[in-house]
Length: 184
Image (cartoon, rainbow, N blue to C red; front, side, top):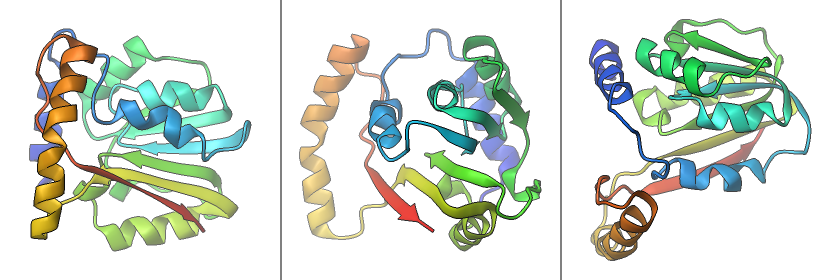
């Protein structure tokens, strides 16, 4: 289990970086993730909302978005950069928060699940989602086999290309992402 004080401190520092790039390994998937949602949904929970880019996109299709992040600086940036009337930004540890059972239409988390106990996350989603609710996880995956390492090694070339074309410099390292779609 992660030391959440260290995670919070790390993401507070990231939030304070000047001129964050418009492209990164998470937001390049946001439009793809939205394809799994109907045109209009009720209440969404964005776990690990960061600076709120995905929360703002969700808000365009949702009655309400509850956007949670452990980092107070991320929440400040989200409020400054991506504030909309139907987004409620909350600074806190999702493990310590309460939501009514069957109260959420969508739970989405990007690059945060690896910080959480995965069994807890699945149980939480099953309990808190309404029948037919949608649970979307986009997260990091650890290369475990030689074939994973070889395949992801080839990903270095397009990764460098995307970083140069989208941000005008090489900023992000190689980051392997895997998305999983669950309908509970």
